[in-house]
Length: 420
Ligand SMILES: Cc1cc2nc3c(=O)[nH]c(=O)nc-3n(C[C@H](O)[C@H](O)[C@H](O)COP(=O)(O)OP(=O)(O)OC[C@H]3O[C@@H](n4cnc5c(N)ncnc54)[C@H](O)[C@@H]3O)c2cc1C
Image: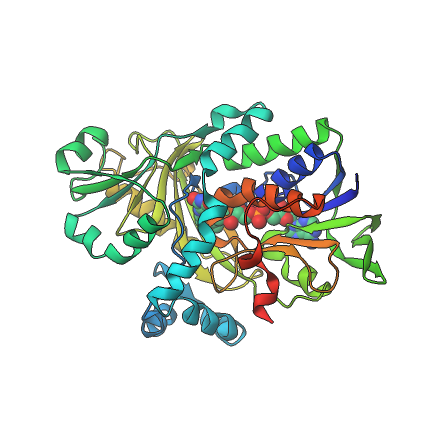
């Protein structure tokens, strides 16, 4: 049965969902206050990595011991703004609990794996449909370490990755040197995860997917969803800041801004923004041939059409606080140290800084599936650190659910009811 579906938000999740719904013959309205693919969205400025291997949540055993340090060091890789702590506490407690044992991390990895599986392949197929297939590369991602011992120190998380299907080859110092001649010599060991990939320009991909959707009949409306009109448990319309849009179904894909919309249909999801940053160095003299994650930096280093992008950092400070650009400068400085071929005195006009909002639940799993208070409204948000990777599979899952088909992967772990 063809339905009118309003997709709320045009990040990677909303854009891919619109394309999948059109494939099923539905009428689609995409509601987005800004330019699809624009800088407001996490989908614009992320690390560009399409990593099926990213099944390990951020929370780890013993994390609670580090919280005082996170509060004390505003420039550490994970920082909590002191003023935001009272509002943040419930989320933080759940976050700490979610990673408190290895068994919990294994369960999260098992739940995430199907959502991330074959992400580079799914991205490639979608991008080709949108005429931008060249944006997706499937040449693997490198994880580089100062030594083999540093890799072994992370043995548990790599064992869990392996159990959920990740395969890799090890590179010794010589092999790493040949593959990445520009990388600082302090890195002496690497893993090449061949099934990982990269989207060279995620903002351009999102924009192309929305163009494709519009070319196939979708309506793109500028506006912000503010709630829902329901009657007898059925959806009638999506309220926006400029009137209502009649709808049979709605998909909440507004990223970090989804919390109040989910609450309006009965789900009080503890959604927070894990703010992240990137530094972009234009026309870089040096950089990775293969996108990579240095183990001592926990940030992505990737070449993009705009330059060398270094993306990472986690800052818990809410949606409204001004960016702390010093955090992006840390990323820039890390790049200068990792790539000795970059000039020490980079002119400021060659560096662009960006801040974005990861839509994060405390347990590292998204919310996908019907809302508790109205099954015609479906959640598709909360993908945290892996939303670019998980976008296409999320979209297919939503299309299965709206189409009344047997879902291709089990949606149970992503139910918003787990927070009740
Ligand atoms: C620094 C950083 C690095 C990252 N690196 C990676 C990576 O390498 N790989 C990976 O897989 N993921 C990565 N991520 C995570 C990934 O970017 C996100 O999980 C993903 O982009 C979320 O996509 P989304 O569509 O849910 O949300 P968004 O991309 O944020 O899009 C949400 C859209 O909804 C719109 N919106 C907001 N409110 C409303 C409303 N009321 N009505 C209508 N529309 C609304 C917004 O304008 C926005 O366009 C990274 C994130 C950051 C910040």
